[in-house]
Each structure stands twice: as C-alpha cells, then as structure tokens.
Length: 352
Image (cartoon, rainbow, N blue to C red):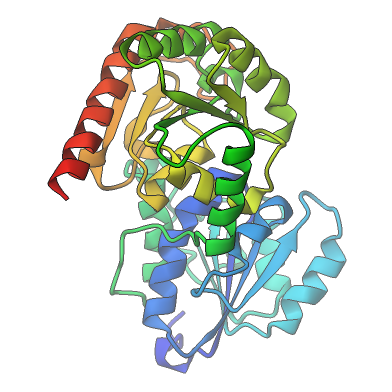
C-alpha cells in the first residue's frame, strides 16, 4: 500500500453487490469517489435486479450486473477485467465472492472494510484488522471509510439516487390509472423486509390506515414491496379497502425512487426502501425492534425522519423470522408520528 498514489488513479472499480438498502447506502461513497476522481472512469458491480436504478447515475460510467453466488462467476470476472481498474473498493459484498472478484479484476490495489475474512491477505489494507464490532457507526459511514482508504478526503455524506423525469411520468400515469389525482396525499406503506422479524404485521398496517382515514378520509395508500411480497401487500390493501393500491410487482424497479418521492411520508421497517426515501428526500416513520437504527436507520436529515424503536430483548437475532417484537409497536404511536409528519409537510408547503 506504500506505493498507492491517488493522483495516479485513472480507472476505479466499486463493488456493492448485495441487497437494495446496502446498495443505496453505498451511493454516498460512490458519489464521494466521483468527487475526488472527477476524470476517472468508474465502474460498479451491482446486483442484477438493481442495475436499472443506475442507468442515469452521473457518478458512474459503467454498471456491471452481479448474479449472486457463483452464478456467471467467470463471465463476471471477464467483464470486470475489461474495466482495467487501477483500484477496487469493496463497499459492501458477501464473501467468498467479493474480494476474489476484486482481485481477479486485475486491480493492483484493493480496499475493503471490515477486513477480517479469509481473503484479507488480498487486500491493500491488511492491517489493522477491523471487524464489524469495530464499526459502531452507521453502515453508510463504514462505506465512506473504505473510500477514505483510497484517498477520498472530501466526504459528501449524502446518498445519490437518480430520479429520472421519465420515471416520474411513468409513476404519475400509473397513479392516475389507479384513481390517484395529482393533488391527493399519498402515504407509502413498505410491507416487506429481508426477514419477518423486521416486518410490521399486516394487521398493524391496516389499523394504522383506518386511524389515518378517520383523521382524513381522502388519504391514499400505496403499498410497496418486492415482487415476491405482492400477496402480503394485497392482504394489507384488502384490509384497508378503498384508497389502497398495491405497487409491488406493478412497476419496474427503476421507478421506485420516483414512487417513493411522490409519497408525503413513508412508513417502513428496516429495509431498502427506507434508504431510498432518505436518498430522495421523502419523510419517513421507520420502525425498529430487532435491529439498531443507529446502524441502519436514516443516515442524515434526521429532522426529516421519525424513528420508533422498541428494542427486542438482548440476544434476539436481527434476522429472526419472529415478528412478535415488531408487533409490540402500536399502530396508535405510528399514527401520531405520521400525523406529525403530515402536519410538518403542510406547514412547509404553506411557508414555501
């Protein structure tokens, strides 16, 4: 690492090949890398499902799809080698693939944190050995720490996610088809998460909607989730009745930022759509029980986001499939937080 010279870097490979939220969190480091290396050619390895989100990302020159595990491993290596990177930054990626992919890309320098895997000997930052326990701060800042290792010292701690005009028009047209007018107040409900332990129960979402409709019968609810979560989203929508529409599997992934941006507020657990909302500036009410909002909650603009945290007992795994801990967050508390966000929004609109 002694001979690493940032000023000599002309081609960069960024690896963030895991879930949606992890990828969105990595965009803060991606943007900071672009700012430090404005003339460099920057390629990113991103999980295949999320590649369309970056079609118009001005901080990347090329996006290479990652297919997961060992799928298309050798063709992926070939694609990475064609980028001829001087340096590779593993912002977030699972082993045993992430570090070997960076190595086989041909990059002379490789930076990654934590650096405790069995492939750490391939890294340029072998010492000191740092694990996740050494990073109590937010996950976004761990990625920025990787960028700092590569000489990025002008850190912009904001995530960057394109919201193309075409996507906004697509969302607006779809909402009109669903009977949602441009003047309607839309509240987003993110139904799914990576594990059931991070999902608020269906009945709680229904109860929340009914309480909000009692305040204002004209509210509209958009239920978001991954395609495989459509049945759960439909169950919530049926419970709410008139005023609820399901976006899961109805819109392409590249429209998600525009859809979330259209919402007046998003109610969500600890999942990727939360970070999409933070990135595009949509206020949130986020619900935490088995995970820590200090690590995976809203990363900045904290005055714009309300976090409700009812911690699970010590020892409960963050990826548990038991939703009993999330169920302890009452719908009344969430309704009050949503009402507060909507009031703040109306005051801001009136002020503007």
